[in-house]
Length: 447
Image (cartoon, rainbow, N blue to C red):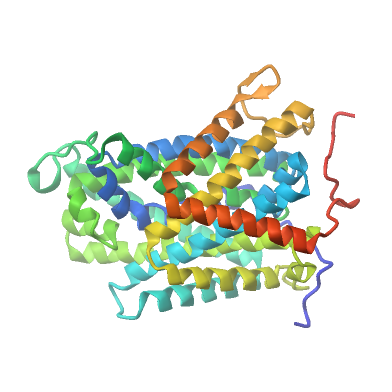
């Protein structure tokens, strides 16, 4: 492509508000609109509890990302944080697994989009998901400003949809479906089901770490990234709990678990078909938004690792005028399309969670090591609570990330092991020098 230029950097065009809206948009679309039915099937009327626990886990790791992103803004955030703390090899493996954790959701949520679109057209689900991925790629190549503005507009629409669900459900709160009762603390599979579902719906909070991947395009990364990460987690946590309580108040959890468009079912039961169709349309915006923003973050991660030399430098190609990493966008699109062949949204979510929880564990450990070394950036955001020199937030985030990995399922763990081994092999084959003058392995700011 004639207008590609690997020497150009990305443009700082994204405001703090747009960063926060990006996080809210991708988080809301990835979770409630897609996974609510499966989550309800595992935990019944207590479905809000796994979302609350996942929100707590996300908050801890989110604070870790906020500090590291404020200190070391990068397009390949997880890769950069791990590299600074543990060196190039673990940095590459962490970035490698996070690439899949940001690409697989595009397939999963694309299939969720197809589920809602199936209420209007009779096309195959995989075909509709692939078309959405290709359209998102076209927008991303066009420019980051256009991508973010479209995403922010979609985020507002999806937020309206969730507020609609809560509003129409108010008369049913405490009463339950069909005038019966609902036990908001009952889980058919007990605590085991709650913990397993927490690991599943953690997928619903993926998005805050993608804000960090816009570090090189944020207008004020040191201030804007922490504000956006914390704000997006707080807003979506409150919304998720309200919506889950509302959903099981209107529709029996058994029926909810069998629906491919669970929120439309809730509105249909509460009000009638016409308004439910409106919700289905809103869900299309929500899921499309998550695909767009997930691919946005994934392409930036590919670009950042390629520019650093950890991936082939050809993948760092940037369009001259738009200053968008078009080659990385194309790579992410192809991988996302391949993962649509998996088909089952729950399976895709488990694979994503296993990958991202590994990366989160490494990133939390990275902050602990960086703090112990004393490599603290002046003026950067710092997580609260420390014991001597040990920051407690990443310690808890590390423990929870490892704990939740146990509940992602055997196949997901096997996938993760294979992914890590493949990453190690690729790193050995490429064997590039990545500790040059532009990206020192250890940056000490203590003098």
